[in-house]
Length: 278
Ligand SMILES: Nc1ncnc2c1ncn2[C@@H]1O[C@H](COP(=O)(O)OP(=O)(O)OP(=O)(O)O)[C@@H](O)[C@H]1O
Image (cartoon, rainbow, N blue to C red; front, side, top):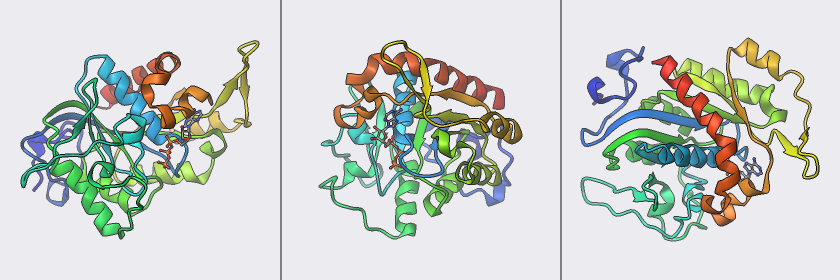
């Protein structure tokens, strides 16, 4: 059952204690849980989750990534861990660790072939996500990053109900930012009483290779109005760059240089907003 003392959301929680569905594992001590969400798939949620985890780890924090995208897990590949398997005992599942010490749990670590589709019904998928929170031996973490399932369906709901998320980072692309897709995700978070820390606009522009001018591919005229009306921060913009698209093929390490500079101010904004919310 839920134990408020060991819950990362304890400080700022407004949930009714008796109705809380969060089950904590007393062996784990996780200070902050940050969910990375998007209204739909393919907009860069997993890429952002990995960049955020890497940056926090570089700053000396103890970091984990929970890949809650059960039917389309891409975290192991992005981190160059696709051939790793998670070990378990009757009591615990042990996360796989990257060379730089990020603890990772993904369904891909439990299946034989990453190309095999996960053909499970919603409740089974939701059960797996819950287990990643309760049964994985995360031990002590400063930040657990959750790569949320895409969209606002059943599994996203389970994650929000059963994991004490301190704040959500919304990832969007410019043409979706002012659409109902993002609004739906934000409204869902609001209904579940989870703070949205802000929005990252991914694939926001391209940089001209000759003059370094930012070229916006989509008109973002209404973005400012949308942000003002929704009361949300723009945490930062990421350009469309080959070093990011290469992440899925070659892993983060080969793309590190350009990403480090681009992502640093975004991480600062995320941590600042997270602290302000406490
Ligand atoms: N800024 C960017 N520039 C170029 N390519 C990008 C950028 N961000 C993400 N991509 C590419 O877009 C694709 C989708 O990214 P990613 O897997 O991170 O999205 P996602 O939202 O997690 O998708 P899914 O919901 O399917 O898991 C990947 O091939 C990734 O390399």
